[in-house]
Image 1 (cartoon, one colour):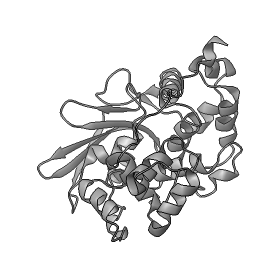
Image 2 (image 1 turned 45 degrees about the vertical axis):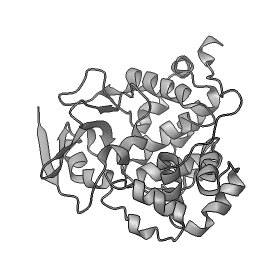
Image 3 (image 1 turned 120 degrees about the vertical axis):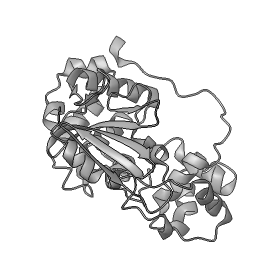
Image 4 (image 1 turned 30 degrees about the horizontal axis):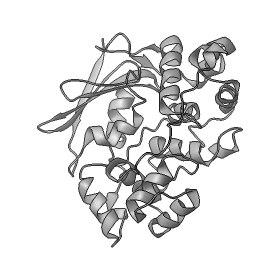
Length: 292
C-alpha cells in the first residue's frame, strides 16, 4: 500500500478540527472520521483519482499522510484544506461583538477543499430540509455508490463518487435514500457542467440558487464573502449575535453590510462562536420519502 507523507508548519495557531468541521456531514459520514488520537481522516475523489488523507497535529506542525492514487494530491494540497490561503486579518472592524468572536475563534480559519463537486452534492441534498434527512441520504448514497477509501481506514469509509457515477444512480436508489425527484434532478443536471472550472457560475444550473452556491463556494474555494441567503437558522443566529434578536434574510444582509468582502467569515463566526436564539415552537420534522 503506497503511502505519502509530509509535515507542514503553519505560521499561526491552528484549530484543525474547528477549521474542517464544516466538511463533516453528520455522525457516520462515510467520507470523514475523527479518530481518538485527534487525527482527522477524509476521503476524496481528486483529479488523480480516489484518495484518503489523515491530518494529525505533531510537535513539528501538521502531518498529512495520503493513500491511494489521489494520496499525493491530497498531501500536496492539505495546507489549503486547513486554511493556508485564508487571511483572517482581512476582517478589519471596530465592532466589539465581532472582535469578541474573532478573539474566541483563535486558530479558526476558512478551509478550502479544491473539490467543487464534493461540496455541491451535499449542499443540494441539504436544500430546504433538516440536516438529519440530508445526512441520512449522504450516508446511504456513499455506502451504495462510493468506492472503499484506500489506506488503513475503517471498512465503512467511502470515497464520494465522481459526477459520472452520480448521473447513473437509478431513480429507485434515490428514493431509497430518501431524496425526492427535485433534488435528484438537480444533482443529475449539475453533471452537465464542469463545476471544478466554473465555481462562480453554479447558479446557472437548474435548482442551484444563492444558498447552495454559497454553501459550496465556502467549502470548495474558501470564499470569505459567501453568504447562504435562504437558510432557516443562519439569519436568526446572525441577528441574535450581532443585534440581540433574530432577523430575516434582509435584516441579516443589512447587519453584514459593514463587513463586505468578509461577510461569510462573520457568518461562520456567528454560527460557531455566537449566540443562538431560544427555540420557539416545534422543530422542522424529518421527512421520509422512502415510504411513499
